[in-house]
Image 1 (tube, rainbow, N blue to C red):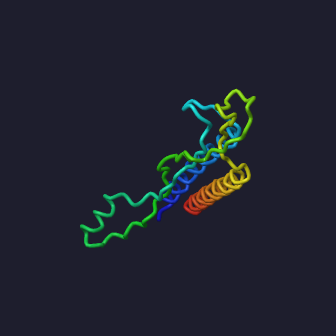
Image 2 (cartoon, helix red, strand yellow):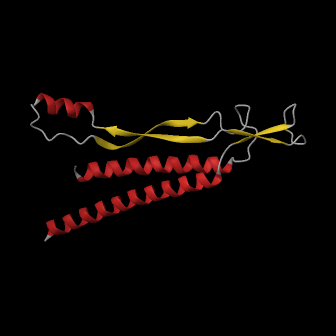
Amino acid sequence: MGIFETMRVSLSGLTAQRLRMDVISSNIANVETTRSPHGGPYLRRQVVFQAESAPPSATLLSNQLGGQLATPSAARGVAVVGIRTDAGAVRAIHDPEHPDADENGNVRYPDIDVVTEMADLLAATRAYEANVTVLNAIKSMAMRALSIGRA
């Protein structure tokens, strides 16, 4: 794996974790939202990741040359497949005075556990920081390689 390929893998991780942090922040901000644009309470969202695989053209070229090329590694970073919504994650609280109460006096709130969201946010932050550390190490190695070439 070359230096630019490593940078691309790390950058894909940065992008994915940034989106994850944004979605988690949105979940925390809407923990008490009873009315959303789609008509009900806010629904908890989660980012779905998938490993990016080697481009089919690289694998095909390697196979056509009888495996003479180095087989590309399977993983090429991370991709965001989508954002999943937990449709059934709703809790009802009896509050007949609330403007969004139904005919039984129940108000539907999103079933979001703030502690779980904060733990997920911490994990996403750590993953983001790890990718930044990798990029800084790559930059340092490149600068050192350039300085060796000058001498």
